[in-house]
Length: 293
Image 1: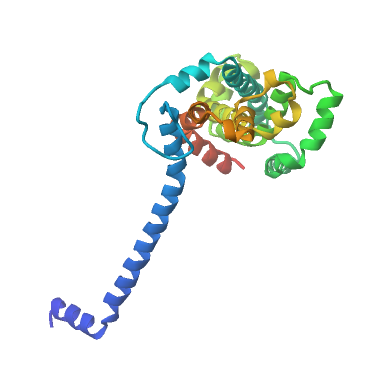
Image 2: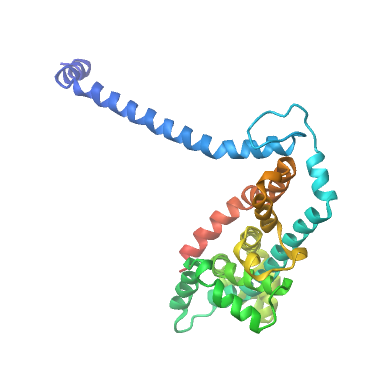
């Protein structure tokens, strides 16, 4: 009896194989249908955003523009209030990113290179802080900002945004420093370099992708922040884009949909740039941080 005959007889004695395959195909089709429905749920709002941003007569409904124009973006940057919203967001996010890079770079290096009692509980405690929602701490942050004279100031929002994003960025920095062999630093020490000299001239360039990934994560987190500026800023000239979009919806019966869509499009560009630029660096940083704990 050859192998072909055995296979034919096995199929004849077990006809449920085709039935099982049919059930598997049905389940796969259902899974694809669910994925397509979820994709449409995500894509449709973005399609309205893009179409309305270039529509001279944009409405709340999704439609292809009859007249394509960049006038909405021109009005956004020409309008004093719209430009100020974008500028304020850049100041808040950029300032928080600078503070984050300086603080978490130094702290990440210390946690990576020095072994001291309580190091691991400290790292886990720092990460636990990131889990706490900002809404649970916004009241004490408001009191602290009031006592320190940071209420309704750029520096107050910058410092608080940097503090909120610091735990995750610190883990990323520490993970990348762990990937740099200590032997390279030791060789530099033998050649006469100080610890700080070896850190800035050797370790930081090698851990550059981690610094970039941490800075981008901090920038996007600060850029998307809504609650902190809403609570701490009362001056209309200091509110960011996130607050401007919210207040545009308050009087939704008089909304300029094209202008609003253009502002929202500009608002999401940094997040898209973050995904395109930092995806690989972010994956490597997470893997390095997990391996270094």
